[in-house]
Length: 294
Ligand code: ZN
Image (cartoon, rainbow, N blue to C red; front, side, top):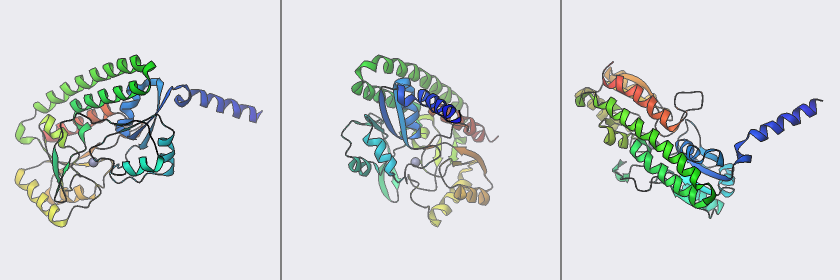
């Protein structure tokens, strides 16, 4: 009897799994992109995400399970712009010959300094208008591998884009209400360059563009000086970064730590930012009162 119950339970679990009802298997390199692909793919696409919630893609080491997921997929979605430094190695190891979709294609990029070198900032998803480009690229990629599902992907992408545009307008209005001189924030790494450009907020970061390098003592001293001279009130940590540096700067300058911003990864489902749009809502809800000095 116990065996029967167990096998019924397994049967139900399998029936509920989207992987068995889905037509298409897709892999996404990190959690934010995984959420976007799932929104556009709907029930038709089973999405596996390589770098999960609260994890740091910059310093990730792919596992044999990741290689197996990529080999067994029909389409692989990545951010590109150098975000996944391990990408070529992973694809090379799997021999995957299917489409690798660079979701950031068409983004107007900007460069920044990383350890004295000029590099392209990969964090393009931190502007919602770039998010619309990601949606278009994902839709196009899914249509190319599954023409029969294309009308569904187009409809899902259109509905999702409308939500993204509405939130974009809301974010712009909220930040525009803060006097420009007060829109200065410190974060643990330079993940908010596109956000800053799009919404008119100045982000200062003690590290370079990636989380894979430590800030030097001279960088920290420079930043402390900058916090004081510019009168920065808001310091933030990020969900996937070490908070100690920002906490040290807060202690030495008397500025407040305004909470954790979601930068390069979503939260787990039971936390504050389980989707791309939730991430934006969470970040703006923390940022705006901090910029206002509340
Ligand atoms: Zn980053």
